Structures are given as C-alpha cells and as structure tokens.
Figure (cartoon, rainbow, N blue to C red):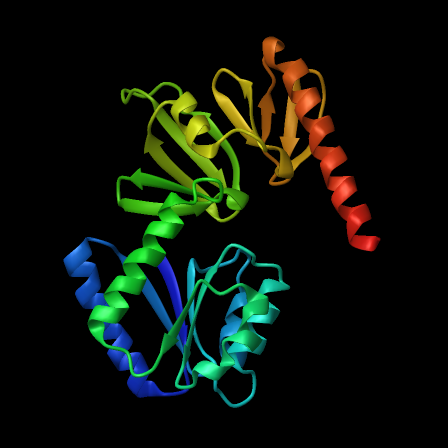
Length: 254
C-alpha cells in the first residue's frame, strides 16, 4: 500500500483526486491510503507528530497561502525526508525552475485529466517499486507493504513455527511477519548496510547501539546473538560504516 499526502487549498481538487485514486486503484490493482491537507502548515505539523516519515508520495499545490508547495517541499527535505517522491500541482508552468531544489519527480499542470493522472501515477509507482536500494516490497497476511530500508531495524527467522521460512521484520514503527527465506530478503535489500550476523538474523548497521564478540544490541533495545562465523564480517562492516559516517559528517562541515 502506498501512503499518499495531497496538499491543496482547493477542496474541489481533493474530491477530484479522491475519485482518480479510487479509479486507478481498481484499474491497476494498487492500494493507496490517501491523506488530504488544506495547507502546508497542517501537513508539516502531521509530519512532525509522526515518529517515522509517513508518506511515499506527496502531491503539493505550489500556490497556497502561508507555506507554498515549494517552501513545504524544501522544509520536508530538510527534516530530512529524502526518499519521499514529490509531484507539484500548479496552474502556471513558470514555477518549474524555482521548484527544482527539492528534486520533484513530476510536475502536473492544472486542470488534470484522469488519463494524464493515470500515466503519471503509474510511472511514479513503478519508480518507487523499482527503487530496491530504498524500498522493500513485502507481502503479509493482511496485504502488501512498502517499507523504507531506513525504517528496518532487523530481520529474524521465527523459530518453533509450523510455517516454513517465516520471518519477522522489525521496524521503527512495529513488526511484520512474512514468509520468505532470509537470504532472499538479504538479496532484495542489496546488502550494506544490512549484515547477516547469524544464520537466522539480519541487522541494519544504522540501528546498532553496541556489540560485543557474542551479541549485538539495537537502538530499540533488542539484543541478538552473533554467530561465530559472522563476527569478523560484522566488525569489518561496522568499521566501514563508521568511516563512511564520519567522512560524511566531516564533508558536511567542510
């Protein structure tokens, strides 16, 4: 399911977009959870109340009183939510150059016809699903989910279950049970910063709080054992991670 926010001070646009998403969902088999906001301040307040970045897609009207869509997008990028995909709505194409700083994916000129919407939304959804270095697409008992890599803390095999290859994905907002091999998920994640520390456990280096030669503690308080054959690999991967992190910080202050 794609989480979408639409911010436009015209309620008529809200009604049109609601119908478009319902029609698109039926035609293409995609599910959307669409949130509507009347001004940029409301969307920004919603963002700041959430413990995690809540949306995959933002559709922002450029011309609004208070925060404009461009100012709103730039502020969200500085939170920093660099993964959310942004589409701008406007009646005036002359805003294109000034809107590029937030790296929008698309630019929609009002009025919008359904065929135009369907083409752009199809391309946008495919872009997100193909961004395997940033998102993990999983199927749970309740449906499909799109998880940001940056939200995943660890993945572990579930023991003592009649279901083979059952995994528990721990994220910064909860956990999700899926049926897949651990190696299969690791391949989808693309490796670094995800490391196999045990034959039944993958961790995200960003969430490591501390580790010893036998166990690792994550920032959410969970502790996991480190397999003997994986201890050296973890130490090397974490040293690489810290080096890259310090280099990034140093470059930021340069």
